Image (cartoon, rainbow over all chains, first blue to last red; front, side, top):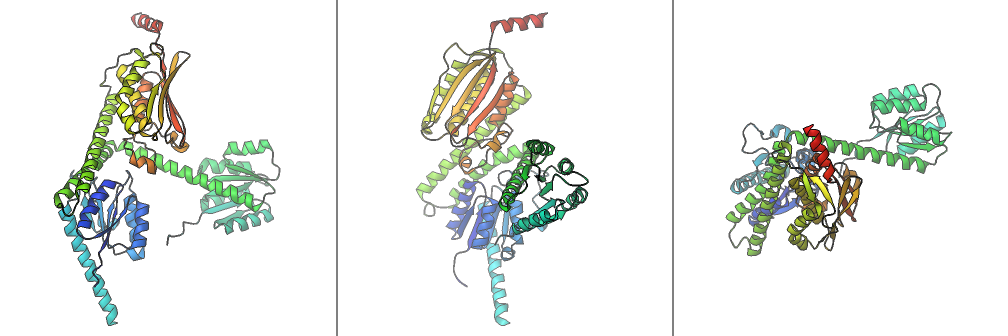
Length: 145
Length: 382
């Protein structure tokens, strides 16, 4: 197990949102990659292979993030990367918007905006820990065979 | 890494075997799927089945004529790009084909390069118009979900502010330097201003729509209206390095309108002219009399508006895409408010623009005349 810092990609069209979240995550020793639209996000994800992705699903009033999440899932090497979908459209108001179902969107967590930092950190840590465990397990299996 | 784009299909309809063969050869090499048919009937069937992006049609064929093929395809599927080829090129046939819906015209004989050029241009045209249609549909959908949309617009800056405050609370001084704190607080202020602007515009729009604003049609001296607004934005202009000037003389251009409406209109136009300007730029307001109307021009030396966006400019929530504009706050409501108010006053608004040179917004308003008032009074009392 290397102690290399884990990489988190944030994709959001609001530069302030990206700045605030990355400052918080960087303070917790993660390396943060930033993208401001879906296309850029997809490119960075393919190039940099982040360990976790935080993606706004409604960007510039369009559902661009939805498609980007699905596109990421279609990319073989990104199939298992944890994706946190975030949006302000699905918060607070009951009946108005129901958070998208992960079975069709393919994300792992849904966080309503504004994102609660403690909740975010807890979920990031949990998913990354699980990912490390899975990676070790599969490395172990490979070593055995 | 990126997946190859879905292969586009091109249909060639020509009774000449050699022509079909060479078109197929040239276009296949460009990466298209090419299907060729030897007469109009088969061609139309093929087009229905294959849904191609582009069709190359020979005008002179036995059976169904090329012109008719063009007309029929254009009627059913206007998004298919139609390129007409003919061995007997005349201006009349070219114009006729264009009228029937052809996109372009290629006289025989032509070189492979000419065919390639025309096909590429046609497909680019198709992509642009499809994109535009998609954009229009999206906006129509947005209008229907006005409330969802406005709340999202309001929530975006609110979320940013919340997120900054939350981070400031979570991180202690060692984790986040004083300079960063200051920067974030500044951003918070900026974003709250953005929210205020949105609420202001939103209320203004609601007033316009609901006619809560009682209108008073009076004589208004444009010189005063414009001078007042320019004074209000002197500081903003100075911050942006933009100079403001008005060449409208006093007591010369009198229009008939509502004072508040006129202020809102020119307020919006002048603020835009400052915001979308460049350092060292200018905003010039001028007026001229045009048979019974006064045309006011608000000209800037700013970024300009690409032609493809101009027809959407006065739509609600429309904002020009682009890296530069991301930095400029705006609600996408200002110009739609302007258009409504101006047309309510019996006037019109239009725009001329050149990218990187500037834009001129022209507002035409009814000239104030003492007689018109009298005539109308007589009419309403009689």
